[in-house]
Amino acid sequence: MPERAASDPAGAPASLAHVHTPDDARLAVATSIFQMLSDPTRLHLLWLLTHGESDVTALTEACGASRTAVSQHLAKLRFTGLVDARKEGRHVIYRLRGGHVTRLVREGLSHADHIVTGEPPHE
Image 1 (spheres, helix red, strand yellow):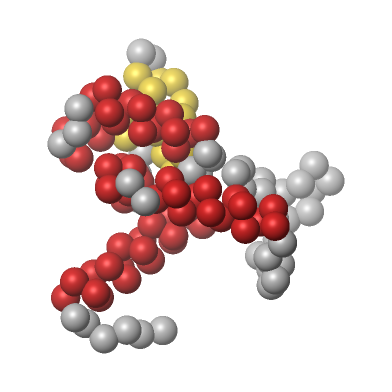
Image 2: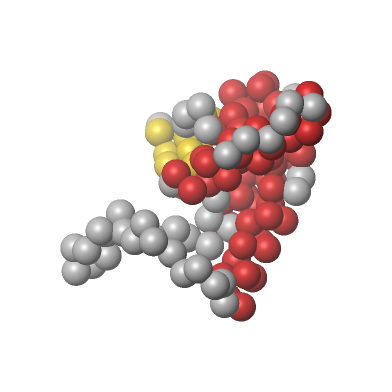
């Protein structure tokens, strides 16, 4: 599920306008993304990463899951293209893959906040 690069090899900017009627391929990819968001620990990790890059140790401390569980969730999130990782010395640093993922996580949790608090919806 990789997002489009900032520009294609020919140098054209990434598209900000997307297909209005999703085809089967786009529906399948979107379904996979929502499946990754359906686990509370993975969603928590993604939310933590909306605040910036982090390593496994910091993510483990922040979300309260075991290091093994966090590592397994991060591997799934990398495989599905929701997070990227880079090596920094002996540490692996994780970050969200693009603004779409950041906005999706924040909007999902904002919507949940409205439901939990009873705050009326807005545009």
